[in-house]
Length: 535
Image 1 (tube, rainbow, N blue to C red):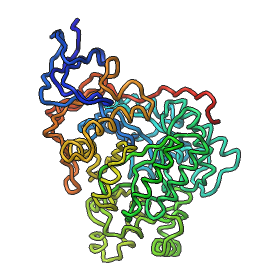
Image 2 (spheres, rainbow, N blue to C red):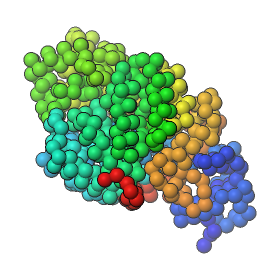
Image 3 (cartoon, rainbow, N blue to C red):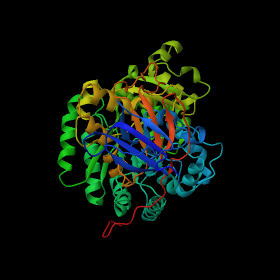
């Protein structure tokens, strides 16, 4: 037998936690078998001349909406074509499991704009059963599950806008614990999404204590990323201080007011003195999410069917319009904060599919109505099946956050008909544009954020570095060509310069655009309970 399955020669090796060097890497049996300035043997099944190319550990996406996409296409082309080999799924408190049998269609319909429909029938109820079904489709990337708070809450309480009683809170803790036993590495909160937005701080602390038992970070989409962002992040700092859980803020931003960014970063710096804090960011000044987040919180009580009924009730619709116009204390109010000109439809369900790619203002003109009326009509007619892109920040605001040393990378990529360019371009923008070309941060720092530091955050000791004995999750790229090509007008474009992506030694992407599913799978190994941990 050959000494190596694959020998990569003469690459600029970026280890993930150290400066780069010119060297060779041998891969055998899905693992990195050797790393050295020069490997003398030619005894290999294949030899790849990597002169002039950069070899990095496979990139890790800290915020991925890939929970159901593998059931449609396990090759995960938008992700593997930019070098993501590991993805954290079920962010924002939203997940396909745990699930009550009588609510799975309502869950599917609410999550549709973020995650797609998934298989025709969801034949699972527990997180463990869902992960088993996901693993069977053999996704190209490795999927790292989170326990999703909204899913847990809905399983126990339905979609009701109230606080849990003591028994219900105990059941929610049990569900969270089962999720960590099934392999989850994070607890996610989405405090703008139903029903998680109905939770009070005490509920968050109780659930965060379950994460603290195993040392898993609490990953949170905070209640308000606009004028109330400082108060919202402060709430989560308090939750993590009280529960002893690490804090990870999802897609850090300040919507509509750049003057909040420096106080926000200072707040995280101060918290970092006594709690474990990180955040992720996608390198764009526009977001993309469920369009229904423009609705006031009270109108989301009871789930999708109840929401649509309110939109179709003239009296309740007038109240919705009034509250969006006036605002509600503490509510982010995306439409009121950003205005109708900020929104472009990324995907609209039937019968409004033709509105995909249009701005909200354009739809309003075509229909001869006020933009807010157009928005509410769109949500009602599609049963909420609308995803939108919203512009909220300047490029300089994005770069100010990007320079911060606590930052990791999350694409927040959504598999829409007309997706946000971050689905295809995140890593190439971080490494290729911001680091290699513009030197906003060093190349070593960019690679560390995408690899070793992210792996450490997730307690994945088998990846994230080019090191002997670790998984051969690797990306080989041309630094002269690697850059994002996806744009808002033309988003479905893979980056230039990616020669080879390996997952556990298996090629899932090659320079000629060939993609394959196979050896990614799902993280199923539970974290050990910490000695003296919470709970």
